[in-house]
Length: 176
Image (cartoon, rainbow, N blue to C red; front, side, top):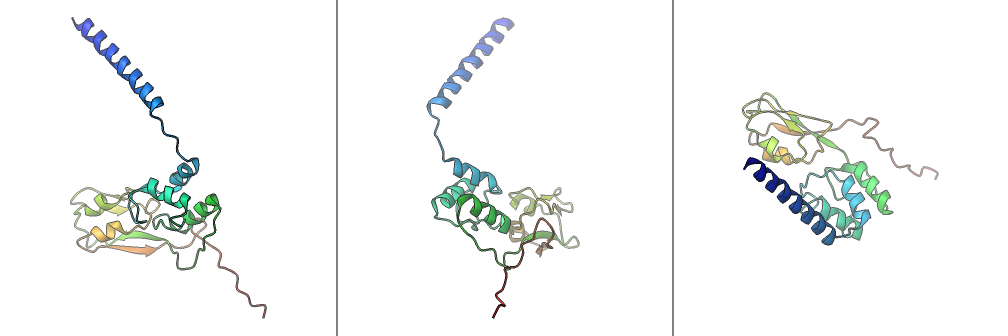
């Protein structure tokens, strides 16, 4: 009896797997490879700060030209330049396009855990009723955690320029 039940479930799994495979091929939808490339570059946090529901929708609008390559605040200036190069459009990176990272004021943090829940990039770690910390390499500066903190112990600090976060200033015309 146990063997017949085992054989039944193995056959049932094989039949359902084959049906799913056929359905996947039959209902396959081809997508634009450029949209897939742009979506792969985006942070993938589905934060909605660009005005779209998610990163896929933002990538589709960037490719169609409805959104500019600089519409993603968490991606920052480096993402805007990369997407602009991929799409073959120009984008201006100004000195005001500074990158920020969240900083927790430890003395004020009560461990309410709201910032951890609000961060779509898992850049804040910590347990409830314990001190939290920000993983600066993962933080995109989207400010969603700062908006959710009831103690206002989260601030956004400017990222100091280094080899990863640096843009040369635009040349000035002093040839007059």
